Length: 128
Image (cartoon, rainbow, N blue to C red):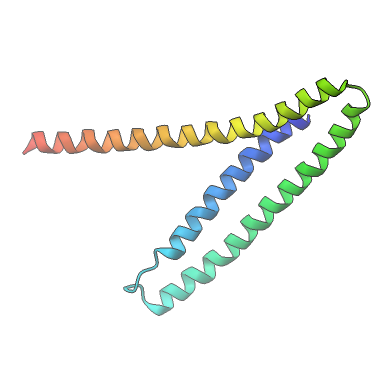
């Protein structure tokens, strides 16, 4: 159950980090042409979102860390030192591989979007 939850929490944290980055980009991209009133309401709307996302990330990570220690302590009484080290390595690699998989999926998605844009621009050029 812990390993399944590890997958879910790591994916949740990656998703929340992406959302937080998008909110921060939206805040950073408010330009000078945005009216002060509009700027105020956008910031007012986006700031609580960043706070909630940050708190959710922290809570999920803390809960997972606590559960990881509990599972490790239980396994320590049943497994040999080598097997316990293998388990510990597995847990660390599992998280790292999930993160790497997400990064690769994002790169593939970006490449597909760029390819579509290039294809569309070629179609437009041919139409002229």
